[in-house]
Length: 263
Image 1 (cartoon, one colour):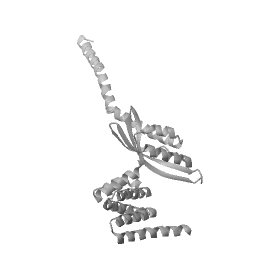
Image 2 (cartoon, rainbow, N blue to C red; image 1 turned 135 degrees about the horizontal axis):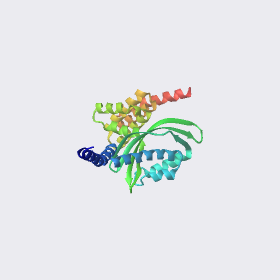
Image 3 (cartoon, helix red, strand yellow; image 1 turned 180 degrees about the vertical axis):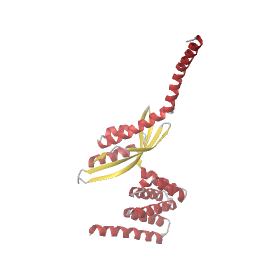
Image 4 (tube, rainbow, N blue to C red; image 1 turned 60 degrees about the horizontal axis):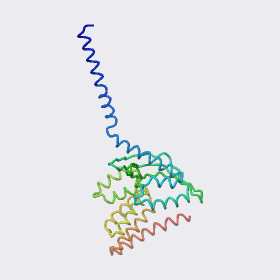
């Protein structure tokens, strides 16, 4: 091999040696463009799995250690869990996690899971599929639970705050799996809060939506509650005739259901 050929081969080899580390670094960067974001998401996912495992084990101390003590839900949640653990056993299948959002020191996501509950007194078993929205915050280098709430609650508020029917319909299409009796109940509860705040007109709009959804899915309890709630809002506004009409409709549904149960 000539000197020129050996020199060309040497330069080519040297070039490959110099390029390879840069290429490897580039490939590594492209596979994980935001390692801190990926780490936050992984921590939140692991936190959700741990949360349900501790929940099923009735490990109150372990569960509360996952929570931020600054969360407004901390105290009430602890009380609710104490009552629940004393009256029933609960188990969960592995959660399906979706809608993950990482925003700096906060992570939100949705966990959908099958929940099986057994009443300790009656030994009655109940199974349901639940969707829960989690919120995590980073405190002192650790990810803590800030919020754990039914996804239907958030959807109910979003529906009530929607500016147009089109926006509302779009939400219902996107969240069709949440159009259940739980959503109707969440809408009625949100509407009642609006009533108590004196926002009667907005409450009536929300009750109207709860009524429509309740009728659509055959949730008679939800329909009755919506009628009674709307009746109360009308009564507060001084619309006594409308209030009486709605109360009577709601009462009729309850009486019919009671009659069927006695048969």
